[in-house]
Amino acid sequence: MKFSLSELDEKKLLSLFAQHDKNIDYYIYLARVISENPTLLNNKEIKDIEDKSDFDKKNIAFDRLEKLYPINSSFIKDNIRWDTVLLSSKYYSTNPYLKAINNLTFKEAGWTLTRNTSKAYTLLPYQEEYAYGSNYNIKMGLMMFKSDYIYPSIRLYDTEWMSLNQHEIRTMEVPIQLAKGKVLTLGLGLGYYAYMVSLKEEVKEVHIVEMDLELIRVFNKYLLPLFPHPEKIHIHKADAFHFINDIKDKDYDFIFSDLWHNVSDGVSAYLELKKHFNKFTYTTCTYWIEGSLIAYLRLLVIGVMKDEYESRESEYDELQLFIKDKLKDYEIKTTNDIDALLNLKGLNSLFFGY
Image 1 (tube, rainbow, N blue to C red):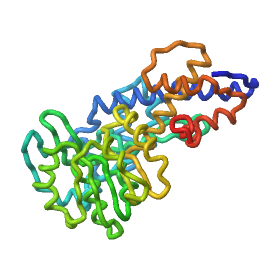
Image 2: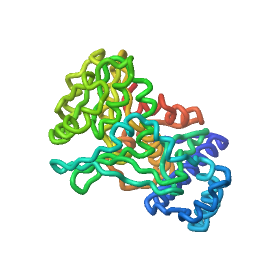
Image 3: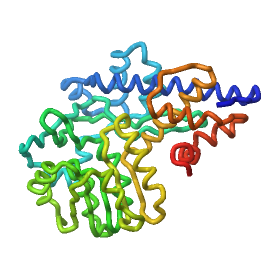
Image 4: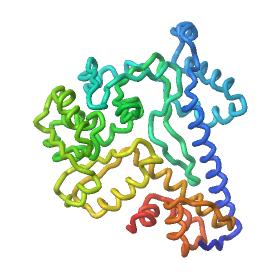
């Protein structure tokens, strides 16, 4: 990679790298807070603020968060407080899927449908990560519930396979809204996506690809009977990455891929699926948490750029080595070259060649 910038453009590049370091800190800090999962207010304190406005309730909770992490108080104010919404757990009470399975439990063939609880006034992921500004500052939509939120979770023995928490529901809203015609979804999970799109009049068929035969049996026995339109549902027992090899453009009107739990285990699968589907012009193809995946890929690209600029040798994984190889002949002369590489069109060109 080559750099030949004017003094002014070099300042822009250094500013990008400085924000990159802040983005890394942001990820690390959020991961720490969410993994430690502190409940900011106890039951008595929640009762005491019952009559206060939501604005005041949120500020009281964040004052407590700053006391728990005093070194990071300014970081909390600048990066988290104003990106967090306060919701009632009743927000989801009208969700048709949650209402349909409200009384359902099962334990069969290693699969268990159980319930998890998000405690009131606990900081939780809500929306996908997004980047804004010329330096691609990363933020994530966060939330807290005003009361405990109980939600379904399906486990395979001791491993959580999928939980229908607030983040899952929120991040599927757009793919549900866009679905129409003959729909294909890669991954079954709790059947939430299939259920929600099958309710739509403009959705005629819902095809699901799932490779776990026992999960399919459990779904057919316990969940499918709760679907108002079970006749729309068609399940294909197959490995998704083999199944897609036989898919042609126009075989489906809409495809939704949801084969991963998070960004770290999803980026490779996303790249493989996206590369396969990028030749489709008729079928609309969408991917769960694609915004987060793109933000992560951009973060990796900027990290490689920074190492190249500083002539630093770092230990790379396979994806970073791929990025380094693709950038070896790339020359940055102006800020336009930076933008052309890091915007969505540039990332598509880098990873998919279009």
